[in-house]
Image (cartoon, rainbow, N blue to C red):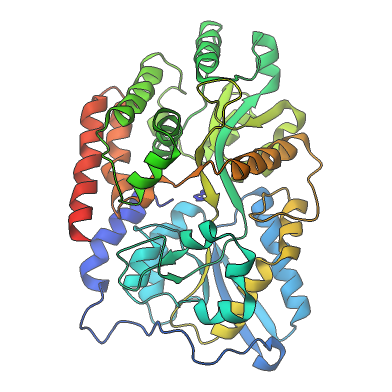
Length: 451
């Protein structure tokens, strides 16, 4: 995640990419790093000699932090000749600093490089990441992971297409953007978890009428509004239309269902269903406030589940966004967490590949479960806590129904600003749904013409 994260790129990252594009863009310059896959691959980590492997990650919260700490300790115990120099930053801070680090003379060996045009595609185009296909030949990642997941971490050499080309990363966790709810507050309000969008709208009105904050929401970074809009969009348009739109194979952001989703977001804001002054509240503060009792519902990623489970125990529940009709399949944003990638300047690429293989292995999936995180692949262990069981069940249901849609910030390198900004204005009542969607389409059209 953008972690969101777990999971998409924030406005600062998009702005940084734009600002540095001229300085770091590939072309005839001899400064472009070497990014060719190695001709020969060694899997013998023990014979690599004493190695310090520098790893940059954004696993700073709860179970995500716990799982990577455990995996790092296990890897070093297995290979005493390897010392892991771990540098952890929040998702926002990682996105702000990663490109500069990759373009420098001494970049980290392994990084979590966000998917999409704003990050991974730009890094690939600039020759900053190492293609992993040669390592896949010995570790078998494409056999272990479904094609849809490896496609998310694949980019063409020119950075013009995501979802195809060479493999540039492997992920550990699964992700869903779903609906958390405070069980105690629902009980006091006489509300059941909603089975349809109509029931959810009624629940929001009931909560507001009884003095509660219906939806905990913080949107300083702009990305939260994009995720909330995306959940509404999935309910209005259907998964295939969203997939085609984000990946550039059909549709327009100004199509009627997309405008209707923006109208719903505006209606909720006008009705006072969000936390007051939501645009001034940080994204990571939202689950903390929710755990303190501020809000009946909260849309958010499963990357928040371990922390919420620790703070709220059996007082919190999780479900997929409700469908239009009770019992119908639902779709929502998600897929897999930020992939672990090897930088093109790494002097220890073979050890880095072995490390990535270790932390995304079947055994690593069990460690994720133990830490309260959601593994991207089935694990032999199952979670014990009710909330984490609900998350695992939702992931199974979504996978069975092929209900995952891509994060919207994948659409263009500048989409977090170009669309997230207008959505901030929409939440504040300073623009209309039609105007917001036109700005999204203008940015999208301009990018499509350049590809």
